[in-house]
Structure formats: C-alpha cells, structure tokens
Amino acid sequence: MQNFEYANPTTLNDALGLLGSAWGEADVLAGGTDLLSLMKEYIHSPKRVVNIKNIKELGGISKVGSGLRIGATVTLDELSSNAMVKQMYPSLAQAAMEVSSPQLRNMGTVGGDLCQRPRCWYFRGGSGLLGQDESGKSLVATGENKYHAIFGSGPAWFVSASSFGPALIALGAKVTLQSASGKREIPVSEFFVSPKSNGEREIALKPNEILTQIVIPAAGKNANYEVRHREAVDWPLTAAAVNLTMAGNVVKSATVVMGHVAATPWRASQAEQMLTGKTINVELADKAGEAAVANATPLSGNSYKVQLAKVAVKRAILRAAGIAI
Image 1 (spheres, helix red, strand yellow):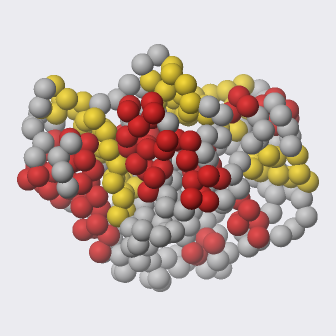
Image 2 (cartoon, rainbow, N blue to C red):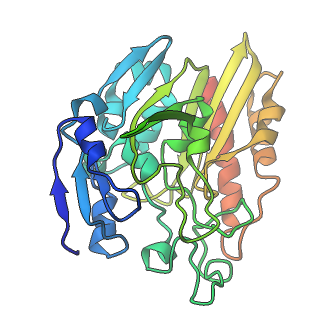
C-alpha cells in the first residue's frame, strides 16, 4: 500500500479536525476490515488514516426513550451479545451472528458495516464503482454478474454489502453524521444511495463527516434471514429483514426490506401490502415472498437470486411471527 499519515485522536472534535473536504484526503479507521483491504489492493489510497477506535463517545449501547442508541464503534460481537438488542431487535442480533467469522465479529463495527464499500469484483478489480470499461460501457450487464443486482435500472449494478442496512431500515432507525461545523440526522433509508457516476459514493456520508451513532425507535416483531452459499466466511446471496406491528394476531403494518439484491437495501412494498390486515401463516408468507420479487429484473447470470430473495422474505416473515421454519 502507499505511504500515509496515521492519526490516533481520543476525542471526536480532534478526529473531525483531521478530516478533509474531499475523498482521499483522509479516511476513518474503525475495525479496518474493509479499509485496509482496499488500501492493500490500491483501490483506495488515503493520504491520512484517522483511527477512531479510542474515542469513547462513539461506543456503547444505551436506552434512549423507548428505543436504543448504538455507538458507531460497537463491534458485531458486542451487538449480537447485548441483552437489550436481543430482546428488542432480534433482527440486528441475527444479522450480526450471520457473520460467521469470529475475527470479523470481534473487529468489525456497526458503523463500518454501514460504510463499507461494495464487494463487486469489477470495483475491487479497478474498473470503478460502476464497473465500466474505458468507453463507459458497463462490464456488469453483459459480463460475469451472478452476484449482482436483480432490482434497479443501473448504472450501478453492485449490491449493497451492509448486513445491518435492511434491518435498520425496517426498524425505522436513523444515523447521526457529524462534521466540524455541526451534525445532521437522517433515516438509514436515506443513507444508502445508488450512484450515477464513478465519482459519486454509495452512501450519503460526506468526506468531512463521521457516522457517530445509530438511534432505533421502539419496534414490533422483527427478524432477519440470510441465504448464503455456505456457512463459512462468505457474503450473503440474498437477505430480508421484517418488522411487524401487530394488533393481536393481525398485522397492523409491516416493513419488509431485502438485502444484497440492489445497490441499496430494497423496500418490498408489495409484500408489505400483502401482509397488512392479515394473520401470518405459511401460505401468506409464501405469497408475500412472491410479491416481493414480482418486479425483479435479473441480469444474464443471476436469475437464481429471484427465488432466493423470495425464500429470504418468506422465512424472515415466519421468523418474526414466531412460526417455526
């Protein structure tokens, strides 16, 4: 990797003062499970790396009203083992435990998961965020695309790599983004964006900002379900997160969000409508899964993901409702 400055601040204000106004001037280091690999492969070479792991105010899990505040540097292991998280937001605990590598769970952070770059092999191979050749033609659309998007109209065909994005959107969570000039709070649903050019980013974070915390309101019955090729260290093929607000045995409202199927976590509004006003059972969950993928537009090599996304939605619904799968 290229030479870089290394800063180790102990306060948030000091860290913010070390950031730059453009990407590449300075990058934030938390667990480092993504940034270091990008630097080793020369995909990204920041001039300065700012370590935020020693900033205490960025850690911890605590009650906020009827919900929870999760600090950006909370590790996946801390999240999955926290009693409040397991009780209130089992979807988050399940998503954390699905990361099968103990090393990644011990080092990776919640904020880092939301900010990690796409795993698209065209991007990781140096063909830019959109995976294009020198003329601007997409390498993904007609190339090796078995792990790419089945929703969206391009030009971004990578899939959002975040394990927690779908669950946090389903739960109605918000993130706090702070710069030296102030802070802003946005819904997690607005944090992920689908870029239109290689110069853009896939998240709403600015180069002079740090994601400091996630705040989650009270939730209904919620669950997460991932489909993987293998249970060892691997990335999900599809995932789904569900949050059900119940009135007795009847679904009062539902939020269904799919993961690893588009450049952003993908809201399945048709599945939500299918569930609303009904009692959950296996047949209904299966129909909701079908509705979730009704508008899928797979590429040349990934039509198999349509069935996997359907299954993920079905099983997430049943898991949230407490029905054995």
